[in-house]
Length: 300
Length: 300
Image 1 (cartoon, each protein chain N blue to C red):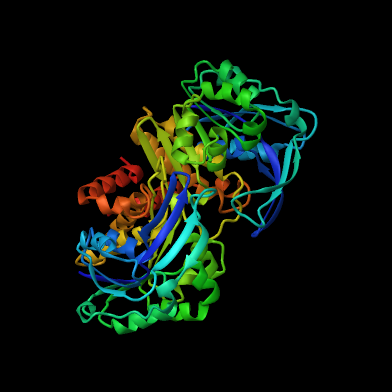
Image 2: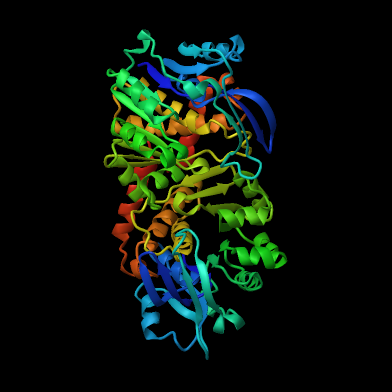
């Protein structure tokens, strides 16, 4: 079943111990879409400037992603520059130029309106809510929240959480949102705000799913080299939600496998700069790594 | 098969957000022994002072632990006081009184000399090495190292590592020992120093085993309340090594289960102050929690 995703499409300049890349194609919606496209049909809602051309468009088209919801407007696309020189787990932001993203007002193509799966990536909660309300046929809605929105836009964020089936956040965000440093207590507090399921991402240590009575831990792959962690979380979300959307029913077993596929896609994202690895990935490689994750965690 | 363990038996005064306890029975050898005793016969080598009496002795005896190697001497036992008020993952040490431990010279009872399994807990690497050499019949030798020894007693520690089959350390120690922040690269560097297998403990995120071609991740149980993390690592080691020693062969499958049992015992240790939980534990509870860990990590 098709997923509609709303979020940022951006250019990123990234420096890591492995090197530096100028103006890679990036943004949460980009990573999410590419990742989810290995599992199901994906439709993007975003805004880009005049610097987003055929070359960038072709990255989406090569994965059969519907880009009719990408609005082209005068000006420049969202630009981010950051580095991971001291800590591969946390980016240091040098520049954030919102550009055309500053006045983003998501426009939903009619062809997207039958999407039963909706992913609200990291954008202003006011916009997340507007998109959610404009997509009443979405039967499973997932989303992310970033520390910025948790700290400074809490009221709007709480409104979004009420309408969310699945929230994907990291440890720091979960603890910040709940005001509680114990992961289990924080998870319960966050779910009391609305989401029926919560995925807490632990970076190199994997992720934990809380969903009703089910608690499930997916590992991350111990990687010999993390070239660029940018987009790992959004790629996780794409694999997780893409797999769920591809299943006839979202059973507990489907959620378990979805956690593994999320971790698998997050691990690939780190292997090259930007979306390079995602662009060259094959479904066979994904399934092989899924099996590797099973080997990594299952008793004989 | 019987395990001989050498390490500290101590009194700990511990403060955590859950409260404070004065002079609990503690020490690495204590936690290790209690934990391993659920899987196999355990023999302890340690030194205690006049403050270690029948009440403390009975904690070991209740678990059928051989205490003939606990030397009683004039003076006071090792005393540690610490708190976890700001960070449950890392103790803040207030007092370390080595007392009789300062001149510890391990004496090995003849009855221990046929032990095929030897665990060298956190003590001066010079003593670890002496015990290892005095136990030539030990066919599987595991041990731990603490940041203190890595920083200030590196040469002696490197000698110990050469004779070790399995090293159990935490993330920080692995990275410090290898001088490398990437976990996989650090693991390979540490194993190049001697140990055939390496267990890196990640606290609340579980642990990773590196053993030849096998990489295996065991989760930690998400706990609603961590009452006291003291001894969790040593309890992990006891469950891990105790289970291995109980098996006819130390196959990869046995190592996988050992990782789970390690995590299981570590999770119990955190539930009460000091060794309280370990003292009241039953084998049935251990097996139930083992199954819970399977549920927590295995695809349907």
